[in-house]
Amino acid sequence: MTTTRSRRAAGALGAAVALTLAGAPVHAGAATTVKFWIFDNPPMVTVTKQLAAQYEHLHPGVKIDISVLPNVSYAQKYTVALGTRTGPDALLMSNSDIATMANDGAIAPVDPGAFGYASQRQLVRAWMPGSLKGLTWKHRVYGIPMEFDTFSLFINTQDFRAIGLNPATQYPRTWAQVEQDGKRLAVWKDGKLVREGFDWPYFNAGWELLVWYPILHQFGGHVLTANHQRAAVNSAAGVKALDVWVNMIRKYKTGSPAFGVSTPTDPNQAFIENKQAMWITGPWAIPTITKGTPAYSHYEVVPFPQADPAHPVTILYSWNWVVNAHAPNQAAAWRFIDFLSRHEVQWLKTCGYIQPRLGWYNTAVAKDFPFLSVFRHDQSHGIYMFNSLQGQQITTDLGNALAAALDQGVPPRTALHQAAQAIDRALAQGR
Image (cartoon, rainbow, N blue to C red; front, side):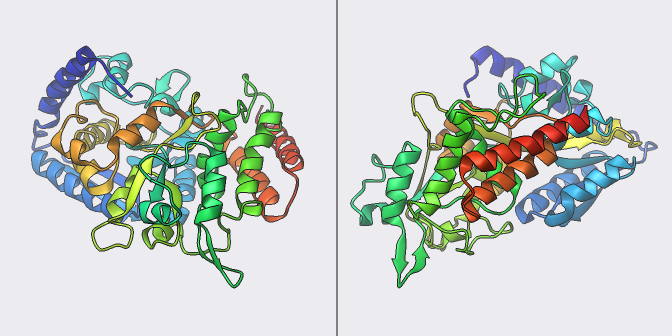
């Protein structure tokens, strides 16, 4: 995504004003504890705690009480807590839950004044264009991205050269090329898969949709109609997109759901161990491919594959800092979030998190971050997933369709028709 010099200058000026405010110590008598929930990702936890300690030093009257919750139950815990008007002052939340939580009055709109801006419009202009769109409900912004992500294609250059492909110029641009290259890159011995050429993520329905949703849009399809009143996924475009998902594995045998090397905790492990020649993941994977890991010296990142490279569509998703609408210390929570969002370079260097607040892209750390231009390219063509109050149920229904088609051999048209019926029921119940 590109920005104008004037917009960058305006963002920098606003940042300077707000930083002065953020660095001003709280009055000694104004003791405040900000309860803060995050999930368990070690690099992220480390940076959060470091910045919390810095913030407490700058603000002697403020205590940041951090709770690190297990990944597997994190979303469920915050859903229950916010639904019962309990929980922390601030927390991390997936963009997929913003609409529901905002509509229920469980989270508070962003306070522009805490960031040094006079209005929401000024705040939005200080972030990368489009980066706050998926966090907006009924024209109000409800979150600030901790990680503003996209997915790109990671390739093992050694494996490409072994089958006679130059990874610098002959990497796949289309899904048809991924199918062909993935078939050649896969290694089977005595009927057993030893190395995948390419595979999809099978960790949960939400993760699968982050990959499949942009493919659906590449073919011109949508999950919902324009007014969000009915399902639209069972279209000809939807069938084409699901054919890509199924044929990759069942027809071209580029990989297998049973190849259980990677896990939700270590999603990039198969690629890191050279047991997967191509893998779709995000910039946060970069710090995990460190010196000494098998993939370190021979991998590249290239743009997300397309149905038609002339009309690219990619995915945007984010984990975001939000504030509990019923918390006692909302103002203090937003000020702390402002402070967190001003350390983009530290987040990028340590966690591989791209944060969309303007002003960091020309820093030395950003320029040295591997393949940042590729991630920025894919972000520039990205879309957030649908905003719907029935988002969780729709995600489950679509995940069931992907699994039925791939694992059970249900024809894609049938699987999507069943999903559309389930989605329509969910939408009707929500009206």
